[in-house]
Amino acid sequence: MANRRTPADTPVTLPTRFLTPEDIASLFGVPLETVYQWRRKHTGPPGFRAGRHVRYHPDAVAQWVMDQTREAA
Image 1 (cartoon, rainbow, N blue to C red):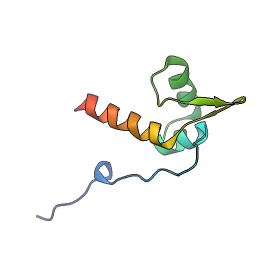
Image 2 (image 1 turned 90 degrees about the vertical axis):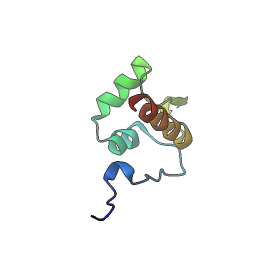
Image 3 (image 1 turned 180 degrees about the horizontal axis):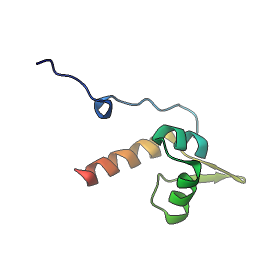
Image 4 (image 1 turned 60 degrees about the vertical axis):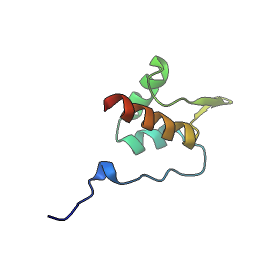
């Protein structure tokens, strides 16, 4: 049987720009309100404020995903 890759095995390439909450929602396939709840509860990827806008550093998001997958294993 051929060794098939599942979507979870496929590496995701993040943009090289700072990500918006909308980007995060799209990336994880969750509603935008979920991203805002993660921020309020400090359970999602770490974000920062740029003026009145919330942004996410792609490296911090990638690290958060790695941390989540380690905890789930």
